[in-house]
Image (cartoon, rainbow, N blue to C red; front, side, top):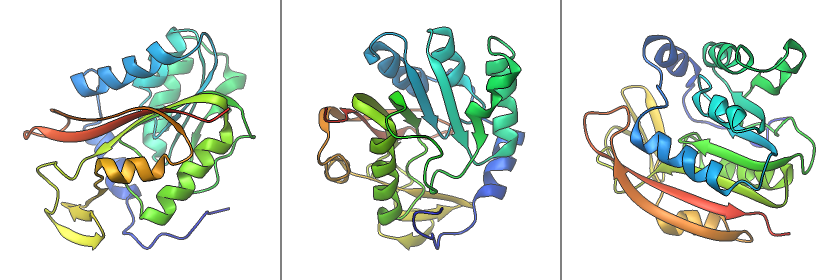
Length: 223
């Protein structure tokens, strides 16, 4: 069941093309740093969920670190490659259902309290505010008490903020790419009721010739 209907432009065509023609490598600095931040804070082996898992670079690192992984992405092209990357290395065929083609604007397809950690690299900044809030509510639902959340989003300090067609408050479409930009106050608001470890603004290069500006956060579900 969809949490709330979005009225933003369709993005599946854009992302299938992006993954087919380019795709992330998982090896750029900002990507590696967020992945390392997540892995370093997980308490031993646990079930982890990657929202917007792309082609599975982060999932592979999590699996190699001994965690039981699940991933969601609405690009079938990306998930197909993620399955090859993760299951081809370690997992038996029967567990392929843990990597699913799925729109995270829908209710997450997992039971309450399944995961010890939820991770998302630049996949939570594509929605209107009300949908974003409901996604965070779903994240809290599928996390165990005390579970870890690590995520990154684009910042309002980013060079592309304000560039392109405005689609809502802090939301712009540039060359077919829709993004919602956040400031630290927005992140604190989204994490109200969580135990927040850190909210950090930072710069780095990611899929752009210009240096990008991001916000990353580390928080725990209140026990």
